[in-house]
View 1: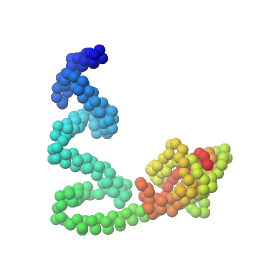
View 2: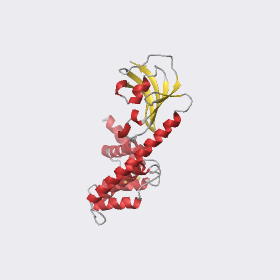
View 3: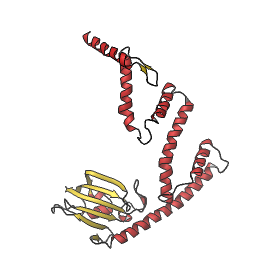
View 4: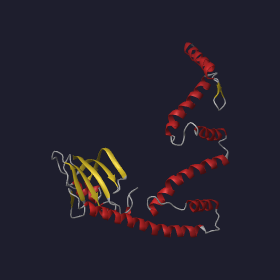
Length: 281
């Protein structure tokens, strides 16, 4: 009973100091349920959500709008109209920040975008099944045909830029070229440790970037690979190194991911790899 009395005393203080409006209704602290309801709600807000919100969007002013939307949903989670609006808003943000920008860059190059008005009109007509301008089948065939055409042009541009970059790089001092076309530069020599062969397991730190410096992938901690399972440029280049060495590889697309690309790496892209050979097993 003593523990319960202490808890009730604490809640009495809470009633005196916490009762009042917070913008969501009156807070009461009459029992354990009241106290834990408030404290867990606050804990969820601060620990789970608040630190995940984009600070450039949710500030002290826009937080009111965020909370209005949250409370509207919380107070009437079955309101389909409000739910539909919320979903549409979220998808709109994702579509314009991801697909619209990414597809524009892929097809037209950096700095160019679709005709936004037409893009949104097409999206609206597709969702509302308005086929006055063209049918879905016509739009699908047209977009596929033009996408393939423009994609090929974009890939040709990537290939040509890579070839020009490698040709210029090959004439730089301290850059060496192998028979396969791999270019490499010795950044730092180690103590002359063990050299790998194609069947070796190796441990490396690396950074993979475009010829413009965009980082595609990076390993800050040593990462273990089987050398034979890597792209051709790595399999060849790492066999030039000894434990402790740091090299920079300039890899033609045919020794990298070729016409298929990989993730954010477009087809026919030449790559720049900074590699430290940590250990050979």
